Image (cartoon, rainbow, N blue to C red; front, top):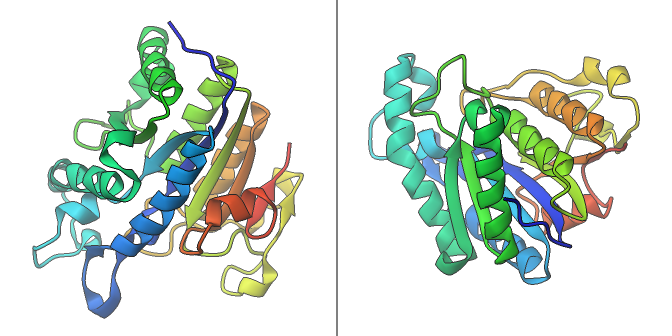
Length: 263
């Protein structure tokens, strides 16, 4: 059973590079980033917009207090252990910044999205939570996922959720916002002034999308462009912006910052 609403839906994916503080060579969650994004998400929910928050950061949270960095860990089970340790910390950060009574959360794999029975259950829970004005926080279930059932990155997970919500016609409209640590898609990845403000033909700009530049992110601009393509095929607009900017979600949807993938 789905709970169809008259809400507009925004799926917001927040990358680890936005949520992690690596100054002075350390590893920590950036509380200010959580608070900044949390305030905006809460305001959107208060105004009647449904928000699904696809959050990275679990592995980074899991390694806190240990003398190691994520990029130095090459054992899959060790990474999964840290993901298991860290996810609760990430959820608690969102509860503190959004309000504990407003946050529902879960972990997903491809099985829950691409298997019909599991998808119906997942969408039923999500739509019910949003009907009650919850902010729904989700992450890939790194603890148990393997190559057969994993998305591999949260950009793809965000796109998969957006597509299924649109296909089920649960909301009046669906948009996807991908928050990262740069100002959007650039013609030259090292030059912020080469920002591409609007994209109408994804095939024409794929040459500008590079892979992840550091060990914190499993994605990079290439995964965001691929996610935008998946979303566009379902009629969903995608926005990419710097999540460290105040009001980044509203500003990019309004066309003031970032890159807009039109449909």
